[in-house]
Amino acid sequence: MSTLQISLAIIGGLVLALVVAHGAWTARKNLPKQATPEPAEAAPLAGGDEPLDPEAGRQEPGFDIDSSLAALTALTVLDKKPGLDALIDVIAPISVDTVVSGEAALAAMPATRRAGSKPFAVEGLSVETGSWETPMPGQRYSAFQAGVQLANRTGALNQIEFSEFVMKAQAFADEVDGQPEFPDMLDEVGRARELDQFASVHDAQLSFTLRAKDTAWSPGYVQQNAAKQGFVAGSIPGRMVLPASEPGHVPILGLAFDSQAAMAEDPEQTALRELTLSLDVPQVLRSEQPFVRMCEAAIALATAMDGVIIDDQGQPIRPEAMEVIHADLEQLYDTLEERDLSAGSVLGRRLFS
Image (spheres, helix red, strand yellow):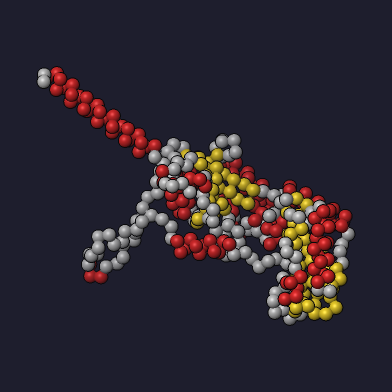
């Protein structure tokens, strides 16, 4: 083989090696960003001894399952069922001639606790405590009241729903030998429309979209970075939540990405380019400063994950725009409080649900 042939063969080998290396580099570059193992804290050693097992102290990346489950349990525990309130409910008193047991009251309850799309409820006046409560076994009641919610996010109570409420309340009253007293239907439907109009004008559900600037993210990478901001896994794949500071309240924020990616056979090879942060304003207490925390989380995630915060039109959201939204929300909070429908309160959560 001539010197020229040898040189060409060497050059060809080098070119092939460079092509293979470039292909591997390109493939690696196009992979979504992965979660990194969290460094484990070394356990203190007595007398300067070395650990016998070189793998001791090694920690695989992931979530603390026990703490995540505890947080989820706190999120799913609702407040004790709120009592009927004339501010947002139609209420029909039901008088009885004799005391009724809790067992009898429960047996008389309708099969469904809704009238159309509106929650329906019956409360009893406890002989022992003198308070209105949902009927319970072992208790005795000297009176009852049935109620249906005037409005929620499905709209105002209409005449058909009012009629269904009357039928359910009457059927219950008949079973406990009671006499109901119903308010005027047209008056209550008119009140429902007024409440629904107020709620429609003062409802607010906000969201920010975070988009990757360059390299996509894997689900594990998103989860790891979100966990650093206090988010925990939600009950639905591809969803995380920022828990409220007190158990029993709804999460402050939601974080969502493609659920199909979260359920993929190999999710770490799945590329995500967007995630969404959301805030249901009337559902979260004002004292939690939810919008401030939403902005802080969005900025922190964008910085850590090399992303950009965008609006519904795909345009970057500037800090000054966030300040304008914050000012508007403060006025909304004030208005809700003036109507005794504070954000995050029992009545506020019922109305905006």
